Length: 440
Image: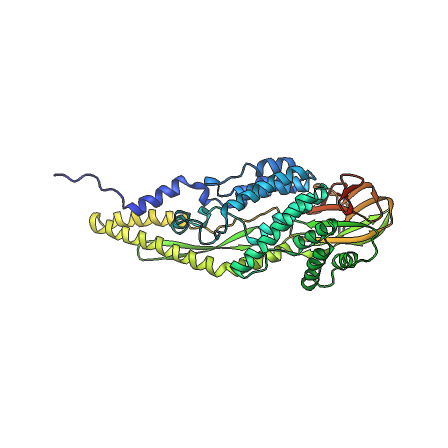
């Protein structure tokens, strides 16, 4: 009997099939998101949001990021309702992952794929600090829309994330400074001054003598209750992750080790100057350095990521080496060399670092809270360190005449992207939020 054509070894065939059918597992997320990021940087937030909302990834692996990025685009555009809809969809995706860890995979099949191809096969469920920021931004936007009930729900979810992170990982990324400050605001507006004070005291211990924290503490402890202005300034855009790789050689093949790191920071420094009725009312100060937290979060787990990458690279090269040797023994050295070359190509192509992260997050979040004389005041925001308009926008925003009510609080959000500043006027003259008056 004449033997039929010999089939390729099952593991090598499976690897080749996975490489051909799952091309998105080999594409870096910053490259996928680039059109939306470019639209953001040019101030075209609607186009950015629509592009981001189309990001899904293979088998929905990037769906969280698509909704999170789209929500941020609408948020910067001042479309708070549309932002909250996208962010609630992102939160629902996170809820679907439950308490399953990101790094080790959420099922045997996902874990096997991540060891067989790369970590991009694991659906991205956000880092702890990203989940906390998601709920912090939701609470902030709900407050600005006058939806105190919605804000309080997100505050509670922020506390839940904090408990989960501390119990499971021993980290404190769960309730970041920005989310805690927003929680204190929401509780103050809801009349829960004791709970607001607890959060503000923890902020004081963590953030030091931040003027906005000190002012808020005095207010909830029964001090004077003048009209106040809260400005949250989101500066620039997060650094992207990049890949560090190293190629190594064995007797019959070669492989690659690849791990992620953050690119060097190149964002514009600066703060936001606030002018009321033409008078300098103060400058925002950093409350949350988002990029610093992101870098520390990656540093905390890079040893595990590297160990897993080394194990995966070793497994792949062993498979190729053994297959190439078996083919060489049966069909000759040239056939073995060809299998080694093809297997090496698949190894190097498939072994790439997971560069996914929430890219539209600001590098840092700055806050200002000041008392204001009741009445009507023209409100202007200016980026420090910038004097004139550029092709991408202007470094100031005139928000018109804003009404300040005795005992009430006006909430203003602003975002810089490069030298351009984006801010929307408060949406109403005055709004009642239970025990306090808030202008969202």
